[in-house]
Length: 306
Image (cartoon, rainbow, N blue to C red; front, side):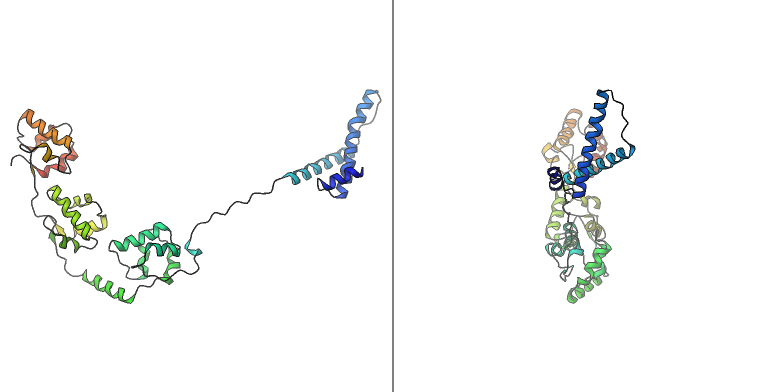
């Protein structure tokens, strides 16, 4: 009996009183299982186990089950805390000028990568922050982040002076020029256009044969909508554009135009060889592979004869 008690205490972690009760329960279970069977075997009438013993058996069974469950249950696995970088985690951000700060400096302060890149891109495209409140116009910069940044925004006085003078210069009468005659110097006078973009615009103009609408500026690689919007206020189109003679031009020469593929150029020339010279440009619509959208785009660049 002592051995069973010791085993219950040491192995299952029962208290001494619980161990004694468990032993008693085991004895009761044995008695309630074996004795009735023996009585039935020897055809001896006997009384059933009293209701109190049955209740006690049920209570001790539940106690044993709960003890075993507690001792065998594995300890809860702690979830690793996921961390996100918020500006509120930064205890001492640096003072900075949003007109000159670099992307890496903003990231080190705690700004998200995309937001830091957006601020720097804004200034690189010619945007200016005249006052710290101007930072609010950056897409994605919420009020909480701004409130944390605001005490550390330091736009230098000299920079403010230059920016104000630059701002006043916008009030001066603007010079308007022809997009098909403009040189790189004129193009660079538009805010947001530098050496590369000005050369790229002129290069594309030469390949096209000239712009017939300012909406074609969207086809120039690297020109964003904001810059094009500023260009439209400064540009006009008064110069005629260069065109291709469809009755005499070769496949190779036609295919050099950005709007005319080699396949389309061959179809134009083959139709001419089969049906004779084009009597008018509308006849080009008879070419099956020439859809209406492409026809509208290439029409200004085509003529019948040299």
